[in-house]
Amino acid sequence: MNILSHTIISAVIAMILWPFFGFWSLLVLVGGVLVDSDHLFWYVVTHRKFSIRKAYVYCMNIELEKNIPEYLSVVVIFHSYETVIALVLLATIIPQTIPLALGLVVHLLLDFVHIYSLYKKSYFLTLFKKSAVIFLYKTFFARK
Image (cartoon, rainbow, N blue to C red):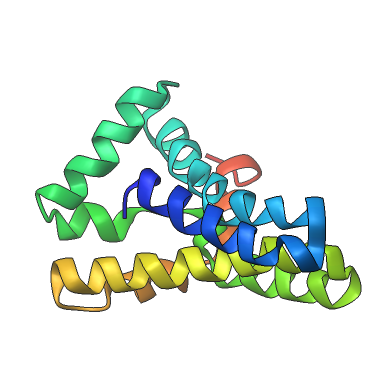
């Protein structure tokens, strides 16, 4: 799903939550939009170059070309089960972070629906179950 759609949906949710959470409701935008910064992180780690534009084009091309092997090779750390568990636990301890967790969960649900409609299969679940912790360990600590 594109960034504009995530932004609009997250902004609507933030407005709905405003009476209950006030300023904290803006965290929906972090969980619903900025979570996609992990695509840039993955691109930098795997391609060894930093370019927001090239990373965006690369990721969009994977989707548009329906390049399933390349899509399945992606590890996006904020789209992982560990991140969801961590944010839900954080939200139970610090109620102000409920909008952050809600933004992430809505983002992931929208991605799931989008990917399922695109590929007619639940490839998103393959990405979701990849471990962010293992990826980060291999990236920064494992011997090469």
